[in-house]
Image 1 (cartoon, rainbow, N blue to C red):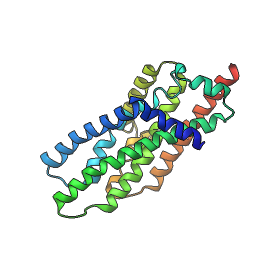
Image 2 (tube, rainbow, N blue to C red):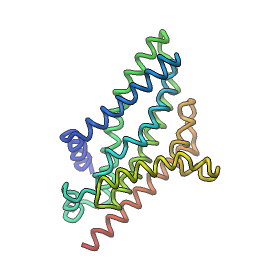
Image 3 (cartoon, rainbow, N blue to C red):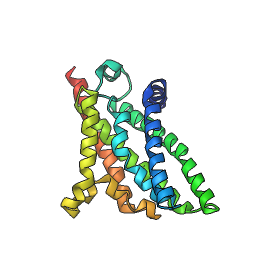
Image 4 (cartoon, rainbow, N blue to C red):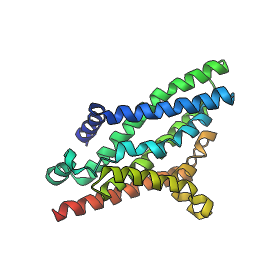
Length: 227
């Protein structure tokens, strides 16, 4: 699996995808940073990061839309001829995308450094740590969903648009019914910027990741068996 992870990470950075994702995320984060810090006068990094987490809904598709949807990029050959299991391929792609997110988080620490300067010292360290943990869990849920959508279609544009639309719809599910709260990853993330690691929320995000990963494996295994 490590070989798959290395290959996928290299693919992100040997093509524009990784750079476009990191650049787009940091560009939009800079806008929120200006509005949240300069306009509102806040020095809470966790609050800022809550707003930037919403950007994942629109940017995560950049990392996942071509994972399985674009058959011409060699993915189909990998799936049909590789001695590695479908599960290792899917999990490898998931972890490679998470690594790109972690790299993006490291770059985002520059905002925390600036906020500490404004605050006159290190501030909100516990909330920052819990926010980062929650952000990783949220990211894993989003990526697994994006990979699942990518496995359903042969067109990466359709995969990307469908991922964005469905993740956006999930924002509003709790407004329809409180019972739909568990289907809204961004709602499950809300406690983390408050410095709280919600056990229930964490478990649900992990279960979402496992569920969509399993769905993706099943679909790809079926595709492989039909060839």
